[in-house]
Image 1 (spheres, rainbow, N blue to C red):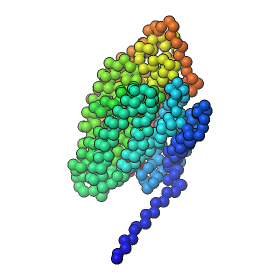
Image 2: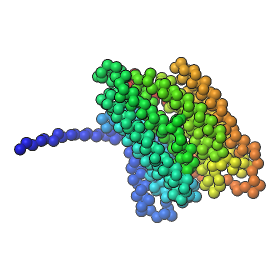
Image 3: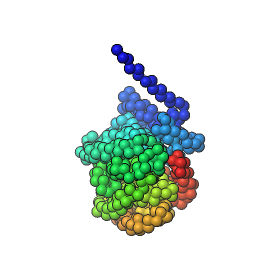
Image 4: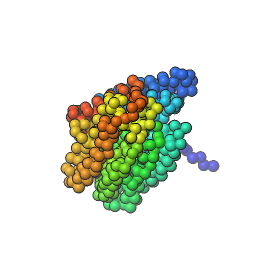
Amino acid sequence: MSVLAAATIHVRVGASDWGAVGPELILGATVLVLLLVDAFVPRRVREVSTWISLIALVAAFLDVYFLWSHGDSNALYGQITSDKFAIFFDGVIIVSAVLAVLLSESYIVSSSFDPGEYYALLLASAVGMMLMAAGNSLMILFLALELLSLSLYILAGFERSSPRSQESGFKYFLLSSFASAFLIYGMALIYGATGSTQLVAIGHCLHGSGCPANVTENPLLLVGIGLMVVGFAFKISAVPFHMWTPDVYEGAPTPITAFMSVTTKAAVFAAFVRVFNFSLNAAHSHWFPLLWGVAVATMIFGNLFALAQSNMKRMLAYSGVAHGGYILVALLANSPAGATAVVFYFLAYAFMNIGAFMLVSILESNGQVGDDISSYRGLWQRNPFLAGCTTVFLFSLAGIPPFAGFFAKYLALAAIVQAGHTELAIIAVLTSLISVYYYLRVVVVMVLQPGEVQAQETRMSGMAEMAVTASVAGTIGLGIIPTGFYNLATQSVDALRTAFGI
């Protein structure tokens, strides 16, 4: 009788491993705390969940600052990294989550949501997004994507009494599942062609280190790249994979719509840059034409569809589609300048896009119709502060100086021109001019068109005022004094280049 000796596997996880994922651990532990609070704390004092969430996010941001100051490190055998590129996106995601929590406080009261579950899911999705930005392996990227997606499926349909919200959650779940299948299949084929799921190892392989000659022409690799483009394109709402976006954005609770409109794109684009601009850089000639067509279609159709919208959330959904096209233009530059433009764009986008959704959320918290543009008539008379701040956000989204959106678009256009693809810059400028019309249309309705004489006063809670003020400060500050944050974005890309040995 033979005895098979089982091999002993030793997995060593030290303090440095835990430290590299410190922000994720803080938010993950807070998810468990929030669920316990939801189970045992009386409902009348459930507002404690808001403060627990804010404290956890501030603690995670302080840990992000600590990691930035103490150099790069890898965790869990190189599966996860805390390089400055990942840390910068962690900061963007945490700031976006803080704004969403501040915006959610009064919305939860008016909608009678269960705050414990709501905030737990919001923070769980943030953990998935941060892990995706830090993923150094195809498997980590997929697991992180599933964590953020599963949380957002539930949040999109969280308003149980609303058929529109239920439809939103179901559509997002159904279509996102198909996208995940494309993505995991593409990852499997890339593993089959290169023999590794590690992004750095795949990059070295495609550059001729340890792989057969002409591996960049391997059909497995080419099909895998195509499938990954489909999976990523769905998550960033790129045309023609954008169909879910307006329906999901319209039906989901507005603070969640604002949050996911920025952070999902930020997490996926962080992975997009890491995978395509660095790991698959040697196959650039194969994926560039495909993404070129996607970027052009996204800019054109995103703006054209936005023109026809009378619903604010659907208009901002198509606006987000178009902005995804502008960020793809920066990615297509395939250069340090292009990657820096992507990083800076999301910092600016977090303030101006979440800020644009704040008007809808505040009106809904007041019991008013918040998503119909015609309902904004006379807002300047009812609440000049809110109308003025919304005007700043819309001008920034349109790329009008001196706001953050102008400088973000300028960096993207400068990068693609330097890369020799002036045609993309021309298309981006022309489509951006189209966007000016539908953004200014909202401003005209708010400021110049008179409202009803007996119109209800529009009030804001203290937390909502903090969120609006912080967003305005970020939108104006990043436009007028962008140098410091631009330098931080440059440092983050330099760290990524070092990690891939470039």
